[in-house]
Length: 163
Image 1 (cartoon, rainbow, N blue to C red):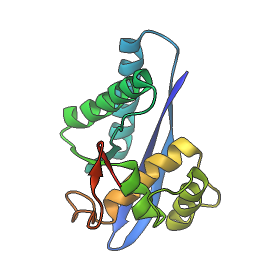
Image 2: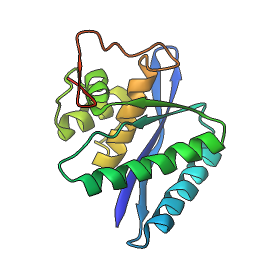
Image 3: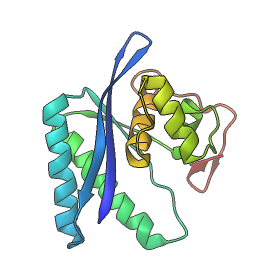
Image 4: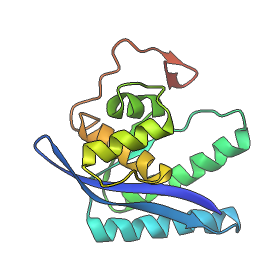
């Protein structure tokens, strides 16, 4: 089983409000069926919450090229779901997301979960997949593409990642 996280927030002025989050689980079936499952599930989330914009984490090259390719294909299914619904898509690196949410581009997953909890006023830490998706949404809301770009001043590109 493979998992894709999603998160939805609202922004009113400088206030962020939690709307929804969760995980899309796909069965261990052929890749085209897993991608269809991701697209169908995200279409349901879009139909339920009517987002104006969607933020997606960019893929960087892992040690395992097969995993990188699979992640890229799942990401493509998510982008297609947004585009087919005429929704603007913004993309951020993991470093940009962690920098925007935690203040440290190399933060641990637990730190991201804790800051997402605090920033959205949640009673408990969200799961790692939902926290990652909510963190991406928070990054976008705090000045991302289309809302005033996230600052990358002082960073340089190295092998497709901001460092």
